[in-house]
Image: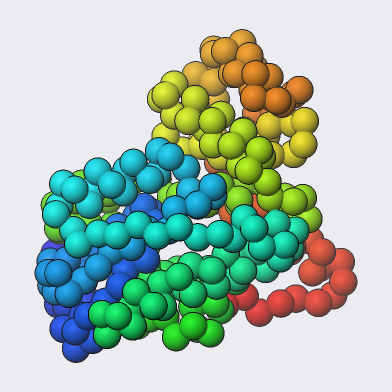
Length: 282
């Protein structure tokens, strides 16, 4: 992507931030929210507050990563606790789980923003609009702004902006999602299931697998890795099986489909097709 195009988009985002004046950035630790927090800090200084919601659906690795980034770049940073795990609508894990979760987040951020006379912002980008993301509707309902969407920024541009800001590690960071996304719709979200997923993914990270999803199917751990990582995983098969069994999984499988963000949403498309009822995903 050309430097001039990236610089122009940074300038457009800068103008948006300056017009808004004060922001509270929902910082999850993913690429998008991290770049947004960095931009807010660069443009607004302490008038940009990055806030991370701490709950069982955020892995300890991700939280430590956020803390490290906030400290390294001297962000104005705050952590808040969210209690979606106590909400039956979240626990039942219907397809709108993300909406419920984001609602808890935005309700927690609202008083923080009011106290600062600030606008809550999230890192949603234009590429997200074509996926099934109920949290986007929650952002609309809670009047949360999405600067990347408003300025026409997609994922590739977000990574290019990260490079331009000197955030090389962030620019190359794999896509991430909350731990609850590893549990099939309709299966209750519990701390035990979230913990098993988190610990097995952490184990695989330590083995060198950066892009990984452990999908929790009861007794089965369905492991998604990029196909180029298959040989390494198979070479360590016994170690992976042993760790999975220690965490409560009776069976460990390597998904031949490879790593796919949002793979749990495939069942929604199948049901929609079967019923002849295709939803508009926004």
